Length: 525
Image (cartoon, rainbow, N blue to C red):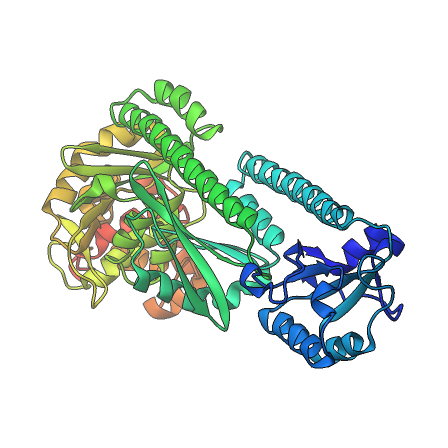
């Protein structure tokens, strides 16, 4: 909008207030010329009306009525041209304009009204060009933002700054929102509720609604006939036509970004499935070559294999799968297992089961915690604990729709050999349970148990159980066994020689713990 101040500044002395004061900065909708006694039927409000004074030739009362009609119509200012019909500003006109709040301007003799009208439209043209340039600049900024690595965050930030308010992108899958500026996180809870209430999913539509005293516009973002998310915008000023075009451009770029991410996810899924299938088939070197294109880094050499049985597994993301598997397990290992599933880049489907290769950091001990927790949750009196899969009951209140089996930590090269046992354990596991246990143990475990139970000079089974239970704490284990610490050290030394393995190795201790749970130490030795 062009202001009256801009027009007066452009015209200089050719359009000036009668009293010489500064002109109020009010917006003009146009410049109109009329000599009618009542021009209001041809006016919309917001204009500067120019006249030579012909309508002012009557009595003072008619002058006041004329001014009142103009003010009631919303005319901003009255410009009186001198020289054609009057040489001075009538006092009654000055008083009537002051009373009605109508700005009174003077056009000196010899200044054509067309000059004022042309000056106004010249200003309009320059303003529109400036707006167009600004709009193109913002459109360019939006397009550049969509090419950055964090495209969604960049687009949201550009929109927020351009509109002087805030912008939020809400993914349709319920993952974390992207918003700008950071302080506007306060509106997220109410915005989520309103988005769910509106039900824009699957529609090419927009909605407006009040939120914390502000007007919000929300668009659905559709890519490839799927709802990718929702863009909510709150401007800090009245919206212009260019602003709405900018928001539509933002929606289009977010849709393109979503489509690009889906395509990348699909391509990565194909690579992931190929690499995983190669590992499960024993072609580890080939899998390393494929995985290099997927992860850009070498495959972990120490891993665990997870098999999952359930409904619609192909459609679940790793994050959703992590939630479902974690729901099968209670206690400390939940977080580790869930995080490992989310981070896994190696996943494939075969025979109705979903397989994931989980990275297992050497020496951390966390990977074995799942197996130990499985045995503890199953109950110490289970007679078949060493002969069949141990199961962990799901957490209370969660629907039983999935079952899973988790293999022991092993080198990548041994995964193919463990596949058959893991598949059987997963197929036999009751729905709502995570299986691990003897069927998944190190093949050496059976020999270790036999050597310990056959030893007759001391109770090595009870000694090893106590030692593992107390995580290698000599004093505590010796006190529980009623032995001197040196005697305990002597027994552990015998165990180490018999099984030719180190009890402080997490792989050894976890496998022995599970295998020895059903062995009665009183009958051993």
